[in-house]
Image (cartoon, rainbow, N blue to C red; front, top):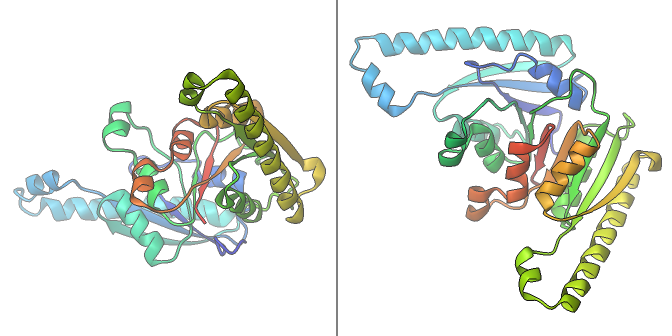
Length: 302
């Protein structure tokens, strides 16, 4: 395993709506033999309901115990499946706000790799509250793997990397190659850089100026791809398993289209920093990819 994950993964499980093929989805992305998986269940009760239930004798305590019992059964079923696939498994139950508790466990217990399958949420809820998945991706350290839209039951054959020229995106690529053992498994990797000129700039600038900017953007994208290709080769990825792709347009849309066109089993994106603005926006590319990608997404913060 890589230095980032250290062979350990935090697996939050929504026991009220468990993803039955969670282990299979994870196995598509990476080998499970020897992986140390920590299953986490969060009992989340809204304060308004706590006050309501407190008026009904000992019922709140009964609810809590029943939840714990049912959660234990769900976790144990998943644990058996993971153990059968070669993983080492531990379990934990906590209570509190879901995203906050997942973040707390990740930081307190030094998990730098978190994998989860998102539930279904209405557009209204996503707009006003943000799903637990998005909040976890914003706050948890290291890598967050969102196991959405898995490809049937076959292992991942193609991984698309979004590269913007930053050291973070390059480091994210390297971390994913090591963590998911892409070189050893001869997985096809597509290195994608998007040449982008903001619409506002094209609207107010002379044609000659825009042409020069576009030329420079294309040259920068080519340089990014050449640098990433060398880094991937240095990590053991064979040349025949590397594809360079330059696209033009909105970065998020183009990355999603690249993942769709190549029928990718995974999209990898580097996220920058932990400042307050990024915690709120996450980074438009990362957030939109998590919500709309046609495949699982790994957001990597180094």
